[in-house]
Image (cartoon, rainbow, N blue to C red):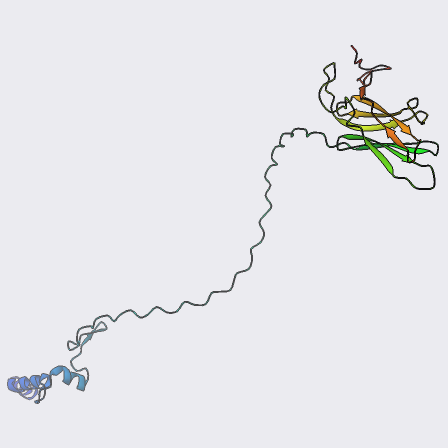
Length: 245
């Protein structure tokens, strides 16, 4: 048994010198200056041992520096506009309080007209416009058509145009007009009466006479205006405001 064991050892184990030579041959570079990393790169990965998937090659160089950041790319095209959203619900806030009533405005301008006609001799008119009362006459005689002739009655004395009457009541200004000839004729015995009612409700009157002697006929209106007695009064029955008291 001892002899057999010695034989096996002699046949299977090389001398220390031979083992050393083998070991050196596997790691020694060739003469001529190449290093072992060059040899490794030529003969594959005989010196690489992988444990757990990690490369243990000690011939790899250090990691190089990170390169500069690349240029920013161009901005992409604008996307299509989205669809319009649905209309929101109508608000239901409470209605605000009603504002106060404004002051009453002043009276507007008064305009009026009245007419009367004689038996084929002439026509009469009374007109009010722009605060002025006018008397008009139209001669109907003859075959030639005559124009209307007008006379401004605001130049007559005591024309009702503001202020107060003798009892201290405000007179106002003319706002309505009428003309009357009970039996229209000529001369002072048959005067034409023109009346106006003012903005304060007072009634004033003047008179004119018709002159038919020379065509065309005309008017003479030089009487003053007078405040009629009685004046209209609320609640009056066959009476009114007495201007003499």
